[in-house]
Image: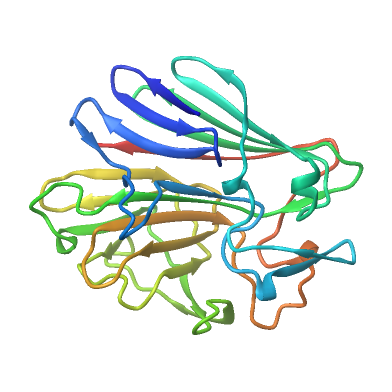
Length: 293
């Protein structure tokens, strides 16, 4: 089922399957900014990554001393969320733990995704509610894809990714084939500590995975037309950038809390790199924001 959120600035589409953000249309610019599926490139709009973004070594993990299956980017993207609330400008989607989720993640929880319009801004709030008698461990990430170039007649060479405030983060090395983290990382130099040049062949060296990100916002910006997508990513310390090689067509900005496994992982979930937790009786929260123009 699909829900439309709408005000005088934006029209946003959200699906209950995977709590997927499917559309961000600006009534001001009369443009769609989110990728609309083309099977030959990417047959979706965005993916919700829970309880793990990225790769899991051997597709298995150890939770509470027991081995559980675990898949790339987690299970939430393939599950139907229930609608807890729906208004013209807000929808609250929930995934409660059940036998299907416990096959992968043996906790009692409610995973809530709240989409709400606030003028020209779309807020996407994540809540992990601990309903268990022990701490609930998890990771989380978003995987929205955007048109790049935004404006027809432009190219990837016209675009930068602009971080605010200035950043000094690392690019993480991944193992060929598995794309697991090797543990090696190197500083990634930004122009003026803020701008990452995109270019047509940005993804010819595969996706880019970064750690130690401390940005409040990242903006996909055309230096030619001024068209932009701004994402608020505060408190998401990891980031993956993904797209297709040879010619820039889609750029996916993926803020993560958590990351892929290390090649030498011990598979223990509770101490996994970047792991988060909702303590007993508590609710863990993070919020992404989207602004377009």
